[in-house]
Image (tube, rainbow, N blue to C red; front, side, top):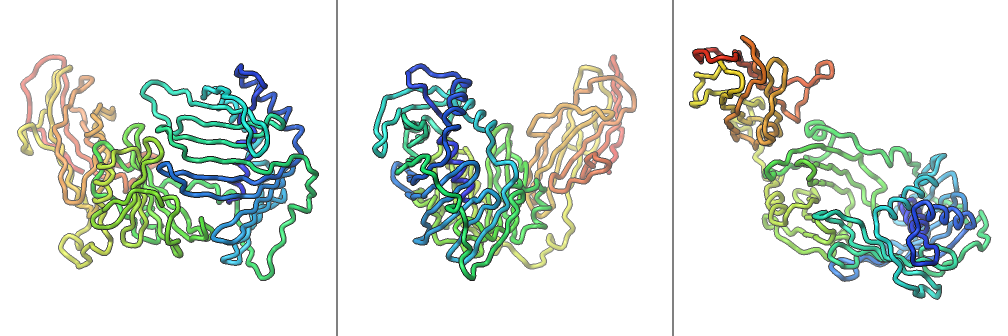
Length: 511
């Protein structure tokens, strides 16, 4: 898939920003017009893309890729990985790449419609102009070519944070192609620099340049592009555990308000990055618009070192060495290994909070495997309600419209694992409002959650059904597309517009 990514980068940086030659900023429509005019004259080009990635202000990765392109959809890239040349070719019908280490050729059928269309280019350009403040800084030479120097700064609202603070772009005065771009993070540090060197345009590159020769004896693997680009299904934790080939680990500590929102699992990837075969599980925790992700992966032939994390801060997690990276604005990354599983914790949480989550993971081999009393029990959840005095009686059952009553609700987790629950209170099938900390409930194994819930009936009636519904988010059952509660309690109440002697003897029904 590397050739597709490179193609996207090259076309994007080549067409993203153009200038009219004056200091006045063009409208999005005028820029699109310039793009179409200049791009129409482009038949082919070649050059060497030099990429430098910086981490903590120092060079972390440096590589060169030779690019050869011809309209409408021919592409060839040549690079070096682990000391060996890597070639990728798109001949218009198939995309080919060769891995010398495994002597394997990967063949991908290209879609009839290109991944990026003219409409996409227009949208990219329009969004860039509309969402950035673009200014011209002057004229400089890049690889012997005269280029306009532009600077794009994202438009941000007050108190809004951006991952990228600014981007400098060098646009060739002759061809209007981007010769160089530098991206800076929100702390002003350079994080990536891309430069196109030895650029040649419209040299008459023959079609034969894009003919891929399969090395003798190489194994050919055909991939389905739709499957490669397909987003994994959103699963419950239980479903993911059934599908995964390794034991999925979950943190015992979750910051207040966060709940497990989704679980995704990838199929085994035999052609993964750097030839690594892996299986990955993503746990996404959410609190309103905020979220953090736990990414767990197992490798069959993992490389010794992840170059992306080379410059990261070393940090101890329960005595195990981990790596902490804070180089991308508010987004931080914590990486460590536990029981053969590589874990990446990614989010905008504070460092101390991320470390607390990481330290709450338990190694699978450290769990007790003996058949103790709890392990022999069927997993279950206790769900009950009490009156305001904390006893199983004196429930408030007679209300005056506009007044409220208090009922204590308790949940005890005996599911032998942490569980995310959702609670709902209904009166005659009408949902009553609950605060978030009573609606979304996270409970560790063998722990009890108990809260006083305020009931304010919104309408009057007699012998009305007040329901307390508890859902286990890992064990969702459906009946005719309606979620079935995991536990269900009932209380029969009366609501009038005048005060009556309160009856507190009505029993509850537990299902």
